Image (cartoon, rainbow, N blue to C red; front, side):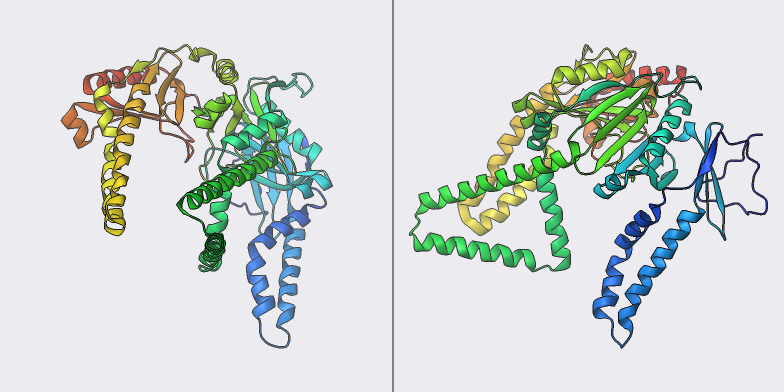
Length: 511
């Protein structure tokens, strides 16, 4: 008998539970120490009010309230452990939870798009992992298990892989189909990830923002103290203009070096031991030095691809390959399958795309250049801010402030080079766009994954006789560049829109 699938967040009355077929995997509890990890997670959420009660409470017995709060959280954690069960019935995962108000969830394996396993240092000490089963629908994971034995977590991942609609027979076992390693990063390559990325600057910015929220005067006071010491030292040693310039450049270089070293350290923590494997038709990424992340997703869940190449990429002769998967936008990006090649040579990236998208004929696609007459439109967004900045600086600094206007010739040259590189390509397998000059990217998606087409024309487009074609897929990340073709002549845009619309009408959407 087919089980009734409960909507997300719904609960069934225990007096009349829906009938279930015989379970193919007996129901199991979480790991015996799972209550400890649930407690730690809850303490992160309640640590601020508990500390407030401890340090700012008044009265003779108020110091007991934090201990009472922790005791309540311990009881809640133990309650969840003793009332949580999971098992497998046919091609569905069965999750039971609750005692007074019981809930039953039936999650078909075909609905699970991403399997994420996370191990912190504490997880690794106990030999356990946190498991999240994610789908494209909903803003919460389909199931979140804190925590399972590592063997049970890997077994659950294998079940999703075999029964998640990959076309592999039920009798397949993890040993029957060997996992192929598509990319493995050595420690030297991980160091290059740190040199390329700006994670150090992002972390410092987040720290400054956090400290400013706690006390707005901390950062200005520290900065003023450092400046006073530096200028005092310079005044004592009689620095002239040349010495001041050398000192400023030296400090700037030191800051850049320290930020890069911090980025390298973060890259080692996040990407050490990076390995991309393919098992059946499922991709798995495993990485991390102290904590380990293991993320698995079906190849058919990949919606779009992005190749990135910045200045440091070109210096090191590397690129980055990212994908968008069909998962909820607000889910933890650290657990999502996003970077399948944090750093790799151009040939390795092309080989990965050619292997995973054999019909795309990548990189041998026919690029169609855009008319150069639209280069000036790329400068327009920077004209007004530059003029305002020059006016403010000229008012405060005099004629020297007008040097800010030199940004406009640079913007024009950069826009001209960007327009020379801008192009699009369409074949039977994919639609692709190429943009950027200083920082370049290639954005492409399978035609069968396109969900919507939109042809838009701004007032400037109508004046210039051009249009923009937008192509939408599911699961586009917030940091991913848009999949669009800009500044197309109207007739060419209409023809491309009609051709893609006819193709989409003939082909079913591959989700």
